[in-house]
Image (tube, rainbow, N blue to C red; front, side, top):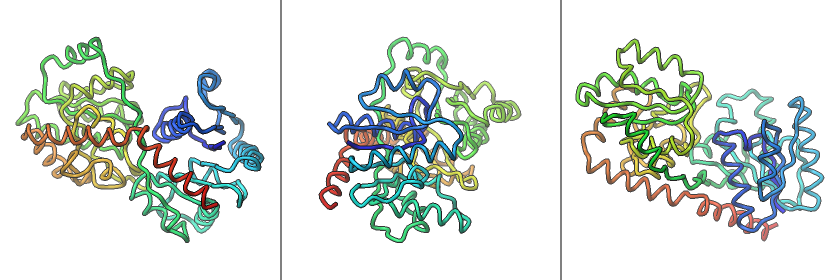
Length: 368
């Protein structure tokens, strides 16, 4: 039996939630018994009934909830020899167990750049209990350095991709009618946060429209920056070229991706907030779309510069503009990078990525 302790899990959606859910699902599909210990969420009872693994939920005041969950996990560790935690926070109140293989994941965003001595001690103490730490990117691995005495415990495994659903004629025709012959099409998908760089694309749009007057920029997602992005489009007089769609159902979102030419998300760092990897670039690649991103965090590992897209300086409007212009102006290059992005997406399907987890688990159980 593999125990998974996580604060982030479906039915809540998000990068970490998706990773932890698919990890549990694919380990179960691979033949392992899996039991998940997760925080309560709206709609969790109906969700959990339909899973091929057992889920135990915990609610209440956060400090008490975390300790209660850890206590229950600890009891199960007596008879089960593998525990996977979503981060150091889920490992903090677990006592070390020499008979168990403990694996802890790291994304980078949970690790402060300038921790206080107290926070440094808390994180270091928690991570010291893990036999192996899985970083989702080389960037994330580098963020772990101040918190670990033994860097050899780190293994990099990129997040897996759930095989995207192909949109049908209804969704594709809807998108085609919405675009009404406009093009080329730039698209972004993600939570509308400052670090994603949506504002950068809108600011450089007037320059792109000079060469591509029918260009459309499609933004899919919700978040705190939504009203600011709409105002920015209005202030620049390009509202008709910017479509801020909000949340879109999966098939419709995929139809927008399929009908777009370039996926753009020039990520940058905002204080401690930075992209740990960016599975959304891989999702776009599934539909043969090359990407343009920034050179901070793990985004420049999700996009392979010169192969599956272009990595620019996300802090520089000129750099992002140059990258987008290069791809828009070279159809053959854009097509080849799109094919490369599709190949990379195939390699990161969960059915492939789960093999790395299985090898890590089986290899380290032998060593225990």
